[in-house]
Length: 176
Image (tube, rainbow, N blue to C red):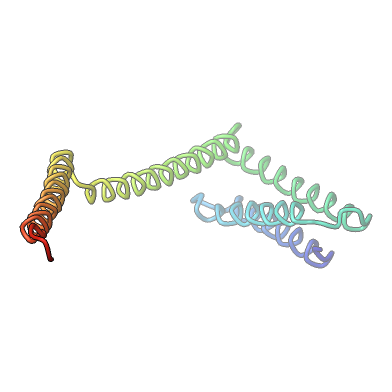
């Protein structure tokens, strides 16, 4: 269960970041001077969202109330940030930022999938390289057939030798 103190600390951090963002955006010459404030607000929002998802005891009224109010407060801070960025840098800037971030995340996921795919292909190639070729498999079959034929021939020869030994030492006279 997330404690109310933790919830308030997360929201307070987001509000402090917004206040710092408001002050810095008036004097900022470069977006890098204020971007870390926005990143901190989103990081806090993500943490709060994850904490709400992890809540197991939403049957308790105080926990459910704290979760909902916490999400609403952070949403208000994000909305204020959106308005501030759009006001300072032009209409629809916020949406462009989110679209760019979303595209970067998608590209990163695609890149990670490609890396995973390449690793799997590499493993398959290594496994395939360790397998004998078709020609080697045919020679292995012929070798096994030759060995089995030799074994069978040796067995037949031994059987004839034993038969000959018995036949030549047979009893042909009266007492044996």
